[in-house]
Picture (cartoon, rainbow, N blue to C red):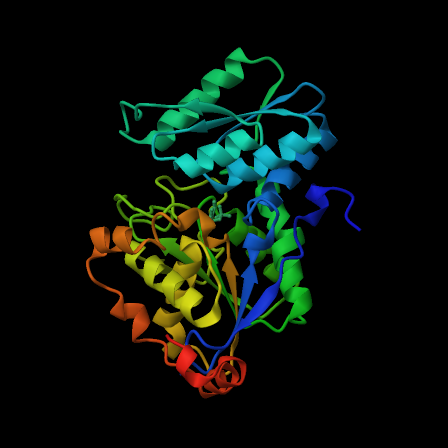
Length: 346
Ligand SMILES: Cc1ncc(COP(=O)(O)O)c(C=O)c1O
């Protein structure tokens, strides 16, 4: 029995992927972080950061928790703060989706909207950080969770995400594919692998247009992975290799996942899948690969899973997932058994 909603965070399922890359000899396992109660991997750092800060006294009765987040961490913090009884101010910008603002408000978070980008950098990210600094100076007993620099962010994945994957696969993981933004997941997993002497090599999956692994920033459509500045949690030695994925990769990967595995996952998960596709011919046959799927797909219904949105941004690309997946013989058999062959349409 769970003591509270917060004790349901973690222990997410690890699921074998057998259909999505039909001719691929790799053993693929997906860690479905969307099963966390707030809908993403970020529930873990949200709770761990708060617990650690409560342990040191940095967060105590009456503390106002502040974070700049337009998505998953904000929702994770809103959930944890609601349960633990802290006021939470979430600094967002106009790019934050209406749905996320509604979710944040439903949990009782206060929304602080930064309407203009930073005049120096032209970036909303910097403008949001500036706003956080102002709030910290003006609100007594306030605490910034600071996801880009807080080691407790990474520790949550060391103690949770990676430990769960390693335990379930008996440490026998050849490759880990993990998408990056704050680099909390990457750092936590990499440090676990190093400390436990696992043979696992890490492919970090970053967005084209993100600057984490170098390069110039440019506009991206899909939120979640990627960052417009290099986070303090980044380290050049954390990943063995970086694979970059485009917005189009994320769309195609997500559509393939739901079509072939019935997994409705968020944008970065599609990117992670397409990163495997990019490198699969360089990986030894039968290698065991763990893929972290950071969130689930419901928050992308108006974008990735909207045919109109996809057509508007990428044109007519449905063949990229429709041709890829063939009906498997065993499915034909099952479908026939259940419904009769004529009633099954794909
Ligand atoms: C959907 C999604 N994927 C990937 C990431 C990257 O995780 P991290 O911040 O630990 O690097 C995030 C982070 O917010 C995310 O929301």
